[in-house]
Length: 145
Image 1 (cartoon, helix red, strand yellow):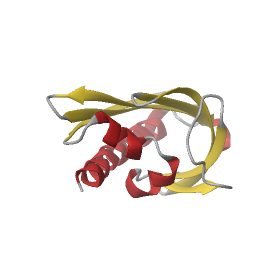
Image 2 (cartoon, helix red, strand yellow):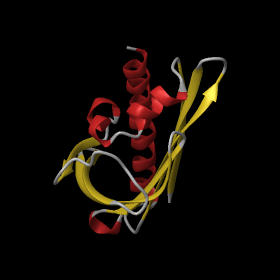
Image 3 (cartoon, one colour):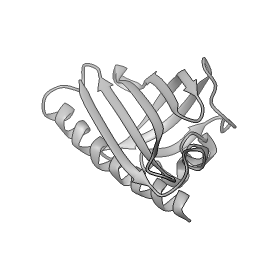
Image 4 (cartoon, helix red, strand yellow):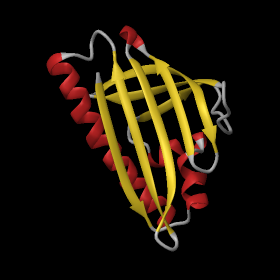
């Protein structure tokens, strides 16, 4: 199983960060692994909702059918899903106040399945860490604009 945790300090209030971070319609603006939604773009997440997304990692596209496990606006969103070859994924996005008017945005990601072992598992972990760090940098630029 691969686990990744990335965080970034953002110069915006938690509510402003959350508005971009947890809006499915804005994933394409900041989430580097997001390729497209399958079907209609959800207008918002809500607990129990399901949605399919095409994500690209290591140059390979995979369709993940997500289920929203937790939705606690404006601080926490947890989604989990299964993609091709039985790859299981869980993402938790969280926002906390930081300093007087900033925020800390965090993405926790877990990947598991028969293919996520050995060298391939390490490659997925490395690629996810790089992509999610870049994603938070893009989110920072988005909310700072």
